[in-house]
Amino acid sequence: MGSIPTLGSITSSTVVGMSQEQRRPRREPVSRGSSINSTMSIVVAVVAVLLGFLILRDIRGGSTTAPVADDAATTDTVVTDTIPVETTVAVTIPLTAFKIQVANGSKVSGSAGQLTTELQGRGYIVQPAVNASGITPKQTATVVYYLPGSEGQAALVAAELGGVATAIMPAPIPTEGGKLGEASILILLGTDVAGKPLSSPVPTVPVAPAAVDPNAPTTVPGG
Image 1: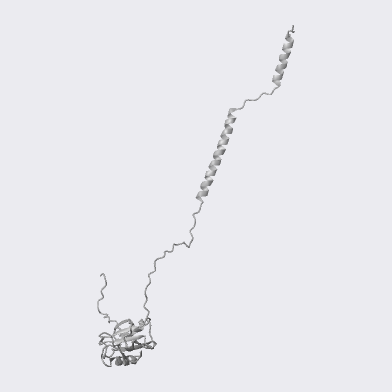
Image 2: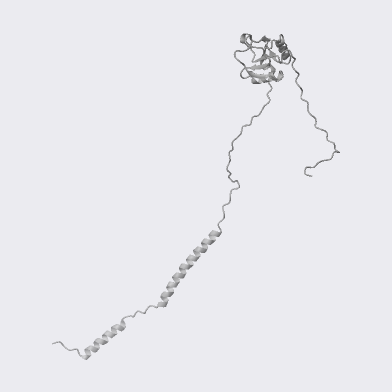
């Protein structure tokens, strides 16, 4: 049968237990106010960092300088179609640079020889006159024929004869024997020029400006 604890033993155990409880350190309760203060400090710090970042960005954006354009601006080159312009250049053709053959197609006796002499007197080199071929009909209009490349010489001779027509050399050549010798120009003489002297070149006379009367009234346009 177990022993019944006495009052003394119970009292001593209770005292010992109480003394051990007193020896243990008690934790102080955490203050709710200090926790709230810590949270607010963190929030304020984050807001301050964000505000500082925004202000710094605005300052940098405001101080940004616009790019300066180069003084030498690049311009697009527009290419347009070029229209060729014909330029007439006056070329002096030496009269001794080519030879002329006169063929009488007018049936006027001696007219080809007469023209040959007159042209020689003006500085041209003219071969002895001949008659037109037998198949060439009587010519009423004088024509200056030329070999290819002698267009300019033919135009010069045609102007000397008063502006007669010019044409490329026909085939066969309308001369006796169908030959030109060394000539590159053939004058097939017609009745319009045969037996007539060549006209003298008309000199160019400069026109003097009209005299102005200082006493004449002056008309102002729009007055």
